[in-house]
Image (cartoon, rainbow, N blue to C red; front, side, top):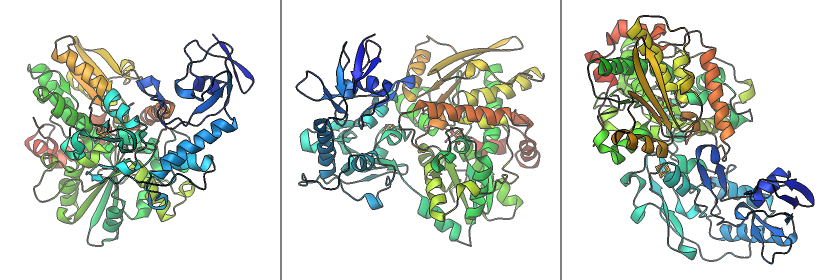
Length: 574
Ligand code: HC1
Ligand code: SF4
């Protein structure tokens, strides 16, 4: 363990530590821009390309990038020499010299790491202004790519290529012309992009942002001819409060329902209701496949990023996913049929808005094969947790004093099983709670399947359902999913059920959540919060949800019925 001196403070660090790690251990600080370390889940980006973290090392002629310089015994590091600070200022000024400088109307205003750094380094003038790049924007249903704001940190490439193994983004050209693009600068919609949004989640500027539908949602709320309902995804309730200064993992279900009512939605419903509905359909399909030699393994199908990944990358396996639509789409389908009929509302005059932690949900809502009628979309607009926070701030609501309210019925009641959909392993666990009781006709006393908890990127568990051993695999992050699917395709792993989520930790780590700035602890806290929602729920199994029983009695007949198939099931593209 070498001893080093950070600004004269002696610190012991591991043999392979970097200067940055030593500085952090000693309680010092150097800014970073291209550096990102989510080691827990294997996303590490340290190309040392931005040079913002340069420090002075005694005895060395050149300044050294702290993120990529290994320590040695007796190293003397000075983080704040004038030379180092001036070098950082020059780096940031050069980046700003080829930047649009439209901070006031930028979607990242107030959340941009480059803007923060310019402020931190007290940059008020820029002697390097000159030539500027001019690229066209790429606007898809889910993501806006604005290469004019790319600072070549390469974090998006690491997220897309190393973590997700999708390989859409890469650096092209050299020097001043260097930029990150898809192949041939194709629009994202024409590539294999899954719209997982992990590139957006790590982009320090507004080079990659969500496509916002805030204006469209306000105008629907202002339209008195429209009946506007809203659904909120499981993972939103454990992250929204972060945007208002609360600790990660704060549960704000009541305030979430309360603020949506204040905003003027005609009915505030819960995607969790539809998650319970999904379990009814998915568990029915799973038991049928299991008992009747059906196609195995069955893959969960609620993550649209994952579904698109499968369609592009493993077209031979498209029979594997459950035909059940995602909860978001099931909600839209029953809102514009069951709820509309019950309340005598013309579905064409209804607007369904989703609040999601996910960018791929924006794309999912536009998939034709997920709509149950050719005349209208089941889900009209999808906004993210971050967009909702912006709307709350814009409207001037004080989050601290928003009254706590409950979801309305019939599409607002849900169970603990639905809550855990938002974390890795949760959908499989929820499905098992129901499948176990349906197969054995016994009451499942211990509803938590420990082997499905945790953060390991791939987890395999066995559950004994009265003599039938059911093997389950869980993976989060598309790179891990790729490994798992390759092993399954090559016959190395045999399982019955696979739960896949594209984002780290599941939906809690989605591309539309408050920025985690590379801190996986934030995602862990959200996961634990969802487990707490489950543990404190009165009902913890989807099939015990009284509103779910009612919708089958009144409308859908039984899980897997013809009507359920028409509204709640789909097919995938090869
Ligand atoms: Fe998810 Fe799902 S859990 S996909 O992760 O199945 O986005 O939160 O809403 O649809 O319920 C996301 C979360 C979400 C769906 C559900
Ligand atoms: Fe890659 Fe996902 Fe970004 Fe698409 S959304 S470019 S798949 S990281």
